[in-house]
Image (cartoon, rainbow, N blue to C red; front, side, top):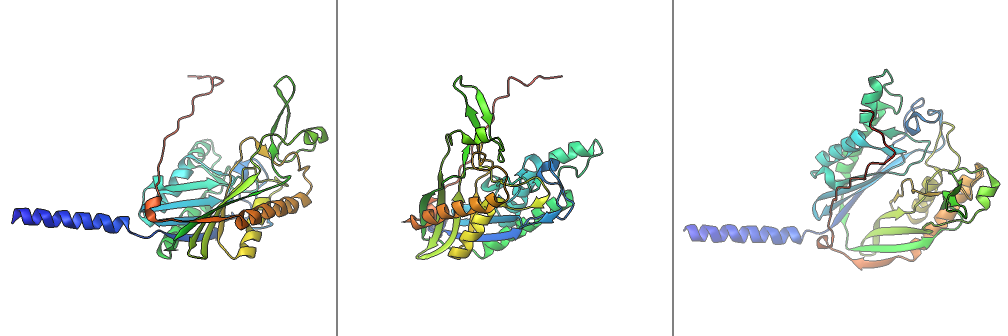
Length: 333
């Protein structure tokens, strides 16, 4: 009898493993407005606070279901989310969708006319009577709950995925290298997102990745979601308290309107890449860059090649990275 029971338990475990492995891949999407109210600090308090809203700051995400515990990828039109803020967003989303915080990725697109969130920094500032100087704390905590609830809803409404698509398109005259080196190998010019020095703008474009990459999720011939990637600091005309998702947000919105497909964009600060060669700060450049990026996105969409996918093809790995301490740091002990 004991042997029979052991066999039955073994068959049940094996059957459960087969069922889990055969679970279809599904995806849910969400998008919500993450714009802080008038008067809120922007860019961690380094630029003018919110005076007007030119266009809203979006928070967009996808939840992948079927490959173990759910995976969430979330992109914010915010300048940055760090330390305690990063942990708070991931933990809240993880609780609501039944996963682990390590399976929730939070990404900031880094527009400067946008808020940040760092509860560790807030704790330090509060100790010096500067609570709320870096970001609107109440709005941030409310947003955490709204994002977590939206992710849970996306989980519930997740739809099948049978294929993924990959495509890329070239973007002309938007990105350029920030640091221009002289013949001695030293930095000759630094091109910030707005560069008014014509000599710096006249220098070569430098080393960049000129391609926008697109990852799409399909149910047969029906597109469910698109994730796009392009390396650049996404700022054109900024620092005046006029909230905007800037040219990257405008190009994203144009593609969503043209295709009718949900699209979340991921790019972040772009490291040594700005629009400085092509941007003298003229307001019209925002629309110009948006149009150039939209053309690249359209080319990437047209070039998309689809491949069948199942939940067994999806894996999620996390590696801890500890950057070495700068030798310029001096411990005042």
